[in-house]
Image 1: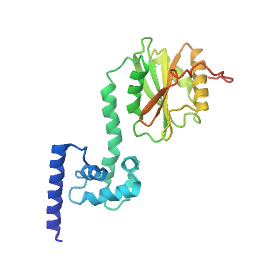
Image 2: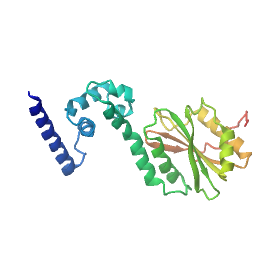
Image 3: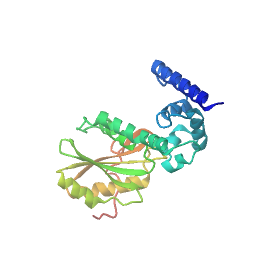
Image 4: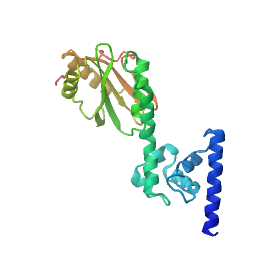
Length: 239
């Protein structure tokens, strides 16, 4: 088929897809159709329907396509670097939108509000990531930062740094949060021990660890609500 005719067919198909999107939204779109339409802007003159199918076949699901790195995406026949970068922007862009929706909730004084504040920060994170929320006496958020990435139980918490940051920003209350990327929100025995150690050490400095949240699968668990703060004896404490 002549290239000009192919281009015409692609443009007509794209026009129909856009009209369908404007008319119906995306609820009726299959995964490959969503991916196909996303790629329109990055690959303007090729059939992205076939490419969308290839990506899903290569990685197995839409979430795994989005989670793949730029190098792996670029290896798929028909992909371009621009298209791979566009796909990799989806997760941080969505995370930023969710964070923006909750950023006005500066007073974090109950588990529901805290959980909703934390969830967006873990969207798309495929490795264990540990956050600390630094709060004043009224539980107003002063600072939120990642303190480690890798493994909550295998990478020691830098309690000295947490304490120094608390004093720098005049924080008196703290909340820990970390994710189980491929597990459930159920805390392990190591999770409980590390939390109790942090609770004991920081408490000696008049810093109150109010809670520790575990995030998994778009859900959260409050260890405080589960009665898992202040229940285990810590045999080794150091700062």
